[in-house]
Structure formats: C-alpha cells, structure tokens
Image 1 (spheres, rainbow, N blue to C red):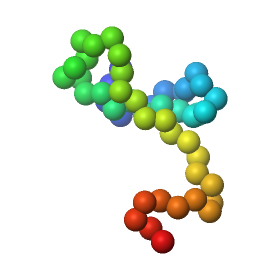
Image 2: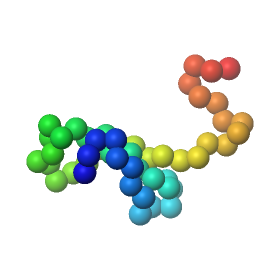
Image 3: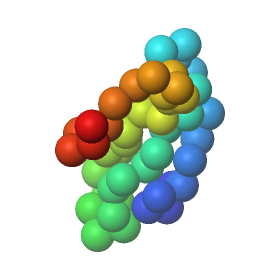
Length: 49
C-alpha cells in the first residue's frame, strides 16, 4: 500500500478509504486510513458559513 491510495471499503458506512500511512512505518501490520463519503448538498464544513 502506498500513501494517499484509495481503496474500496468493505464496510457500508464509507464507500472508500484513503490510506494515510507513510512508508516510513510500513513494517506495521496495521494501516492508518480515513473514510471517504459523499456529503449532502446542505452540509457545512468547518470554518464555512
């Protein structure tokens, strides 16, 4: 796995997962990922009004 690669999620709560783990710690058997989901048109982001 490479940093910033996107993978299809096995879970139904998020369609995709973004791999955030750097190759510096590739020897670990775990990964650091962030779920990617669609936002609704009326959702708000932090810092925006």
